[in-house]
Length: 280
View 1 (cartoon, one colour):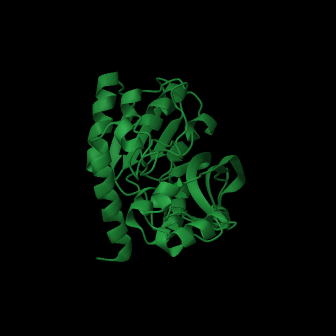
View 2: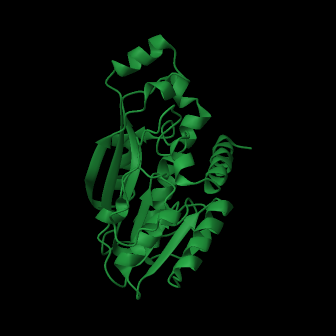
């Protein structure tokens, strides 16, 4: 099995476990919003509860931003959520897109798909659907989405360039995305980079902020902006599991930063045949 496939299988197993837990349990685990701590630290997630369309049963506390708040979704839009989990962002997006809109959630964890479908059934939504699949090869035809959103998912994917190529392919000309994700400035200690739980917890799989933004631009997107940025402070009791006291002190005194960003960009309204992903 390749390294990429090993990483995917690790993430799939961990998020299958999370799908069966409630939000409070997830927030006190490495893969939850709080991280492995003796207390619950909401170090990544933002509060969805004030957004219209919010459904607490679909909120597992796993995000690092509020991409749907910034996504400029209009009535009648077709919206795709990458890594849709239990359906939280999909249900908020559905409120914006309205009865005439359509929302598609994509997740590669069967347990998450089951949970999301159960939530949609409870709510009686017939214009929200969930498809199991890999966001590097989305189970969606080209040029169908007006808007794509994603919340703290791309950092879990080994081939981030492939995901942005797929986003370009699936968006309609003139469509756009709003994606919240974790990025790094500086160098993470090797103890964090090599920790499987820190990968599943959205930290060690993150890449340099500048590289992340360059991937967006190099794949043909325009009007790239950072809609929101916040620092992520990982508590010492989490880091001490992977770093010695000396390594932890050095990390705290370094210029390395872990950030949640919400990035927005558009697919040009007119694309030539040679545009990235166009001829796939």
